[in-house]
Amino acid sequence: MSKVDGAEVAKHDSKKSCWIVLDSSVYDVTSFLMKHPGGAAILLKQAGTDATREFAKYHPLSYVNDLPPGSLLGAIDANTLGNLRSPKEETLTPLKTSDTDKEIPHVTLCVTCPDFEAAAKAVLPRKSYIYASGSANTGLSIKANLDDWGRINFRPRVMRNVGDIDTRRSIFGHSSPYPFYISPMGTLGAIHPGAEPEMVRGAVRKGAHMVVSTASTRGAQEIMQSYVEEQKRLNNASPTRLFYQYYMPVDRKKAIQLMHLVKEAGYKGLWITVDAPVLGKRTADRYLQAEEALAVGIEEEQPSEWESGHENTFAPAMGGRVASGQLSPHTTWEDLAWIRKEWDGPIVLKGIQCAEDAKLAYDYGLDGILLSNHGGRQIHTAPSALMTLCEIRTYCPEIIGKMEIFVDGGLRDGSDVLKALCLGATAVGVGRPFLYALAAYGSQGVERCVDVLAEELSTGMSLLGVTSLDQLKPEMVNASRLLNEIWRPESLRSRL
Ligand SMILES: Cc1cc2nc3c(=O)[nH]c(=O)nc-3n(C[C@H](O)[C@H](O)[C@H](O)COP(=O)(O)O)c2cc1C
Image 1 (cartoon, rainbow, N blue to C red):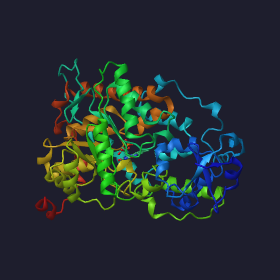
Image 2 (image 1 turned 90 degrees about the vertical axis):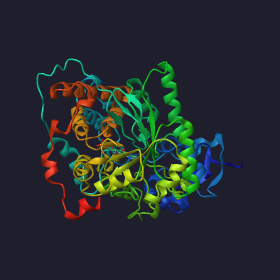
Image 3 (image 1 turned 180 degrees about the horizontal axis):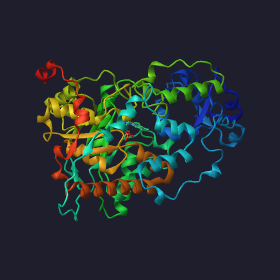
């Protein structure tokens, strides 16, 4: 491969010609600028520089192979690295003014989930915090997620001999000490340098199950390797199992390849995300994108057609990877037939938001459904998972107990898990609290977050008057406020 001088790379630092160094190779990304899902500014900030470190925060390095053909110009001449440009200084105000005043409370001072968010906000670069905390449109979906947990009250029983509490629950036969798991979240490299493996280590040490995102910074095999190594360190004593969240690639061949890869790697179930055929409007991200574009002299970015199908600006974003589709908007219920042929383990549909689709999933023989609105990041004014669970109780209660039903979104207190379980959920997914804990404290924070939720859960069980999760029943909660809001057209019951 021909060698390229750093001084030559440095000259190509504009919209007209943009070269970057990635993993010791030089790429011309000019034609890709307007196709980058996060906007051209992200690449332009790196123009003429060695972008490897920045790139690796968000994508597996192997993604460079997916850049459009002809992008690779040669290897960087190692003796001329000093001639490269330095990356443009961050022009956006960080949340804190300098790296040195990242004073956060000691991890033991985090005694509730919101405490992790406060710590994460202090340490995360502004852009990463926006990514994590962001939601769709004016934020009503995430608001409903957070609020609806408080709209259900317990109906506690007393004098029930609750000295000995058992919080165990199984997910597809894999026992866990807890009825909650870590939700899949993409691009954890933007949150902590240890990225997904750091989250996995915390999960394994506590025995919590975790669902790994397709949009992870690190590859599925590398993440599994970190799991295997941590298990080895613990003499394989941790009950933690990893499941895989699957965005359906458009290209059938690639979709099958990915399924086989994660199966062989040892993931125990496929959680197909179905609430994101296109990307929701991530408002805070859009402001940031516009701000970044202006900072590099672009007045208005043309959102590219490639933008859809990405978790957000941080999601895997390069060439063929994008072109092949990270999430296919063309997926339909009929696709389940071939998916089932290729994947012989449990399949969950992640993102069910009404009783009709829950019933359809049951009729199609799915092993599980996850009632979720993607943490309020997709459709505007989505129903909370608890609301959808109440709909299922109203219109198709017969599916409860016949398939595994998960819920996620807005859960910030361990005792709230009990509400979902009383209403028929198998387990609950928790997203941002774990992400914030990772950001501020690494795997130690993840462990702490598990402890916080587990303690609240166990205390909640004692105060509710139960000693094991199988004792939970619908009458232990007053969900009338949500149930009264269920839409009840005559036609719906007969259709189901
Ligand atoms: C930063 C972030 C990234 C996410 N990435 C993904 C993803 O890659 N795939 C996916 O199916 N869901 C993703 N989600 C949604 C979560 O899996 C989950 O549904 C949601 O976070 C639950 O809400 P909570 O954060 O309020 O607990 C993401 C959520 C956040 C906050």
